[in-house]
Image (cartoon, rainbow, N blue to C red; front, side, top):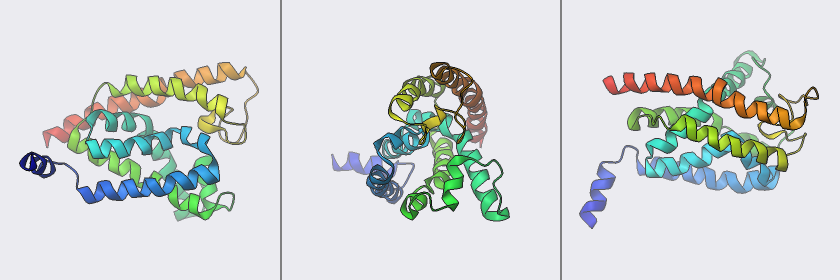
Length: 212
C-alpha cells in the first residue's frame, strides 16, 4: 500500500505544495466572498472555474481542467488585458466592470486582493493543459453547465450584481428585449462565440504541446 502511494506521488505532474497553496487560497477566499459579496456571487463563471480548479489540481483531471479552460481562458485574457492595461497606462482597455472595481473603494480591499486569482488561474490552467492534455468533451460539458448556471444567475442575482451579465452587458441594463430572451441569447452566445473558438484553439495547442 505504501509503495503504491509513493508511486502515485512520484508520478504526479504537479507538486503537493502547489496543490496545498491553491487550496489554502480558496479556503480563505470562500468565507470572505460569502460575507462581503453573498453566496450568489459564487455563480460567476470565474468563481466556478476557481473552485473546479482545486478539484482538478488534486485529481490531476484532464477533463476538469479542460472544462475550466474552455469556460474561462478567453474571458480571463480580456480581464488581464484590461487590468494590466490600467496598471501600466492608467486607462482601461475595455472598461470591464470585472476590473474597474479593482481600482476603487467600491469593494473591500480583501475582496480586491483575493480577486487577483484572475491573474494566476489562466497561467495554472495552461500549465495543466500542457501536462495533462485537452479533453475534447469539455466544450459540450461546459455548455451544459452554463445552460444551468445562467438561469440560476437570473433567479438568484439582482440588476445591481448582474451576475454573468444576465441583466445586461457591464453596468448597463438591457431593456430592448424580454429578460428570458436575453438569458436565452446568452445561453447561445457563450457556447458558440466563446467556448467553441477556445475549443478549436485548444485542440491545436495540445497537438503542438504533445509534439514537443
